[in-house]
Length: 140
Image 1: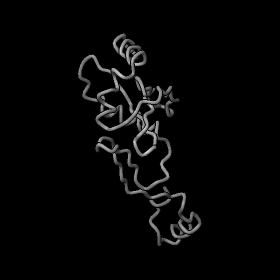
Image 2: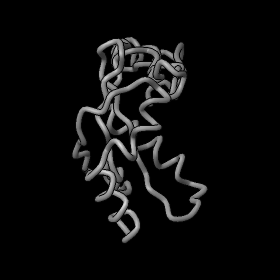
Image 3: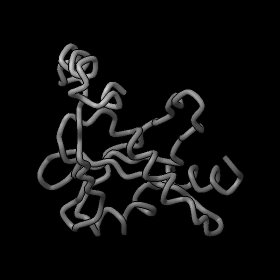
């Protein structure tokens, strides 16, 4: 983390209302607390620690997380980094759609086509591949 990130992080933690006032108001959210979101990277993956993550309360009573990344200059890859950070913070998603949109329409909605191979019958796949009725590529 560079000097700018450190200073911005310190200032934001010292006065959350100044930093989050406009952002939280736009989505009708209330600041609750700062969260420590240091994570262990996946093997071979980069370290991902958001500059700051705010826990907020939505008017519906549900929680919301706001990932903050402070920049002293434009970084064209920052959107990719923040999406990865959000995915790590969200963790396992048992729902078929990951909807992290806020009342004001801000946020992320992700609706992937999911094939959960853990639900498949492994014995049937092996027998089908051996019999030539199922492509061998299905075994992967």
